[in-house]
Image 1 (tube, one colour):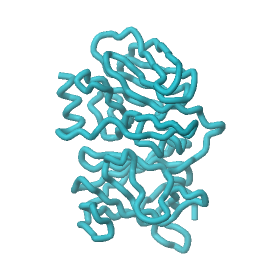
Image 2 (spheres, one colour; image 1 turned 90 degrees about the horizontal axis):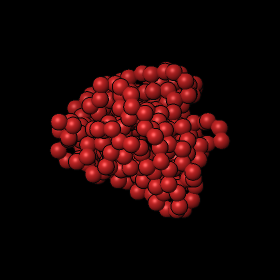
Image 3 (cartoon, rainbow, N blue to C red; image 1 turned 45 degrees about the horizontal axis):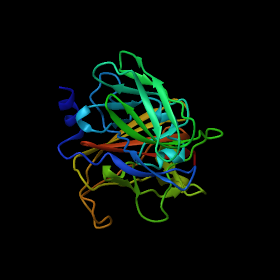
Image 4 (tube, rainbow, N blue to C red; image 1 turned 135 degrees about the horizontal axis):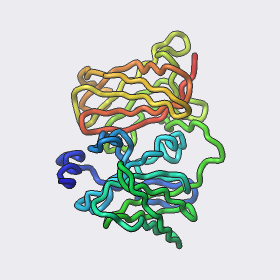
Length: 283
């Protein structure tokens, strides 16, 4: 039954679970497991980011219950793959049986960590502390995920998603096939919006969203990362355009961020979903 639920979440053609995630701690790369943002079948944690361990037949999911607080870190929000701070990350695993522990082994250097699991109503909870940054494989219940482990930032700040000089900004993970067109950027080239949908000069904060994979209604949820706050918008499809070759549908929007701060935008269209982080300010 558990395997059926996992396959129902992923759909018939599940995207690959691995993506290349670069660590800022060094020049090495880490094939970190893709973080997913579409709703999953769990009675209490279904809206949390999650990862699917391999092999898939083991039906082991890891719900990243502390991940949102780290998404203001540019190393985290600019990666398709799992990026964990060295300490303080909480992962809830859905497992059959009662595993003894989670074992983490570093793949690009020496290091092994054994983490005791705590059984709760939500699942088996782990809070690993890694001895060093690097590429680590986390194995539990006969399956594993790979994470790029980085030192925590010296101080919390909002490192919004980098914005290209021209063209669309892809949501993470890229496999979601969703992108947005933003008019404003911060001085260091990151995504910027103005509150209440109005920018300098009374210009509307229009953001057209584009999809490569699906049609219908695009659901946008804004979650504030630096304090409490939330908003939601439903964006109907408005046809196609030659502006974005390869995309099959466009969804116009005016993103009405209610307050300045650091905001996570989650975009969901059918079974596809992804995220961006934006800085918001008053005009």
